[in-house]
Length: 476
Ligand code: SAJ
Image (cartoon, rainbow, N blue to C red; front, side, top):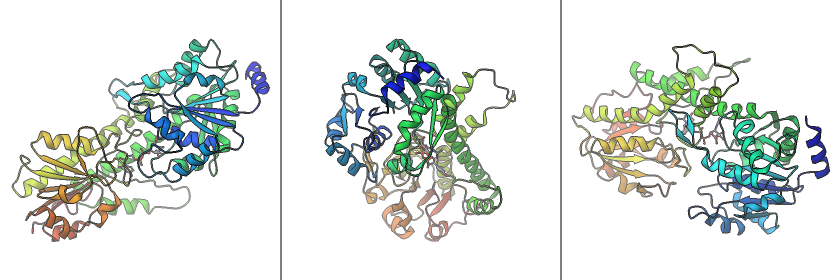
């Protein structure tokens, strides 16, 4: 507990002016909610005036949301805080010096999971920008998901080097990881508990002061900065592990000729005192910007630990194994396609495949690291013609995404479901068969969207993830 920082913060008084660096899925809702706090006077959103994303600055200053897809309440809130003069977006990073608190919500992708090398380029640039304009008594918070040890390590070092100030003495430093999902950004920030971890207690307290007014249902959970980093990376790693566990079970059920959804319902039925069964859903793969990389942040964090890890010598990390199982699912979808065509004496060359769903998450337009992409690559490699439909994803580099499903299904030999968009649950075998115009069309269901029997009865060759009870159905 540094008395010096306590004194500085006392003199400075409560947080009044806040800044957010990174106007994206995390930064925009965070900035709008801070600006809506009566006790905060003004919020600055910082965005580089780059050719790719500079357009966001003017949009935000008009109170318009540059975020794609449905985001309930974001447009209204932006309109409100811009009209009230409580929020401004700027590319002038020198204005950081005006603030009491600054948060960083910048993407932290992984350059190479194998070498556990994260790409912190954008994050480092952001931290350097803060360091250059840092003033005594300011609070700096990292919201990006980062390798455990980054806040008290790399971030602290850069801020001290750039500012000449001492963390914990002259300024406060903390990590408060985002926990948002597209489609419910504002709700998640308001209602989820907020993990807040300072490099020391003074920093934790100052960060608690920043986040508490934003929460409606959620509460602040204070801890150390490194514990907060592990909490975030581990909660996504655990989710990925749970998904891998049920994906493996699905593969086992296929091999044993049984229905994974019967087994899942059975397992989930065990309830009662102290029994929690969080069995998730098998599927065509795990995508997105979080589960696909946070495991590697955690793995890297333990290599930066204070002592060597004590772990079974010949055993691979179950977390990394889980990544491999989930990354295998698009390949499994491909194998199911090959096997289905073999049943009607066809191989992949010249086959036309209709892919339904490009987004990594149902009913969203978020197409970061979609499991559909490796499948498409394998099919093209094998000489197939592939058409992609998605009701929400409008644009994806190098791929034509069609909003009209008829054109995609036309003349297709195989239809593959990769995303569980609501729209697909209404598709009937008769309708699809008529559009495909094939006597023995193939249906590969990666999200348990269709009823196998109705498709089999309509003459489809059916295969579904975890449907060992149907995957070798008699041919009509
Ligand atoms: N998936 C399955 N089976 C399931 C659940 C998901 O195959 O039972 C697949 C989805 O299809 C998708 C991927 O996993 O491709 C990720 O889905 P998700 O629902 O985890 O969505 P994310 O990655 O946007 O959200 C996660 C959430 N983390 C946790 O719940 C621990 C969210 O709370 C985080 O805020 C988010 O990561 C993040 O930003 O870290």
